[in-house]
Image 1: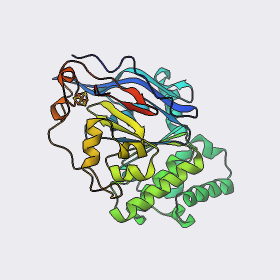
Image 2 (image 1 turned 180 degrees about the vertical axis):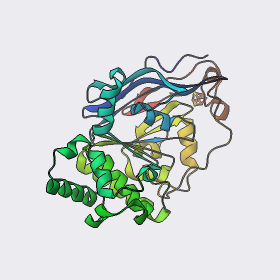
Image 3 (image 1 turned 90 degrees about the vertical axis):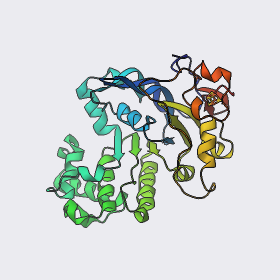
Image 4 (image 1 turned 135 degrees about the vertical axis):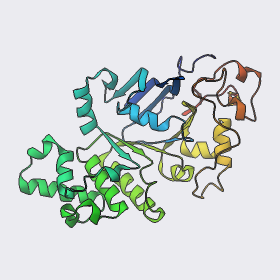
Length: 333
Ligand code: SF4
């Protein structure tokens, strides 16, 4: 094995305001009969209040595993091996299950790709929002509860009569908006949006995304937007983290990343887009990511990297700040 990227991570002073979430040296493995799949291999990042951070990468790069780890929803054979996840000064990995359940209810909202399929088909929207509010719903009188439901529906762009509808009466976009209303009902400080619109018709994708970002701004919540659409990221996030083989290859403000990508992988991803303005998902680049069962010695991108040199074969690069606000994991810097 090469040197681990888990040690001596130097993080950017960004975000300028107080980080609401700090992730340090996060390691997640899936234990299979063939060995441990090292899905997340020592990832560290911060996110500030109200900030929008994009996590981009090919499938299997570890971005969705990070989302599940933040919620402590990694299930066997997966396991968080080590690391630290601090949200609002609370170390989430030290909480017991009940305390973590409360955090999931009130502090972190997940809006996932298939969220709309999680709606209960036999309950009206209003009742599903009541379930989302949990104990808090009991504190609201009938009229006050209705007003809260209408307010939540309004905030995600739905009419108040949706409250009395069943899921089958709603379009996919409307269902995803209902899921958003439920997710934000307890005013979370962090929203994790994992490909939140990819199951929707392309025409409504942007509208639903705009609504999600409007709601995030109104709440003052931070958002981690996970996806593979670089064009979308360019338009909506403040910073981007590029994931590769379970590590962050680069973390940069979005404009800097597109103007001068530092990591050779970022460079290839951006070069594969038709143009800066054109929206498009990256098509991939030649070669395959390494097996996460047997990580290669040295840099995990070496087999695909046009700029690899001797040192890359023996020493694993670490994520470190090489320019103000810019972190990269590459021996070229
Ligand atoms: Fe390429 Fe070497 Fe940089 Fe890895 S460390 S991205 S192989 S130049």
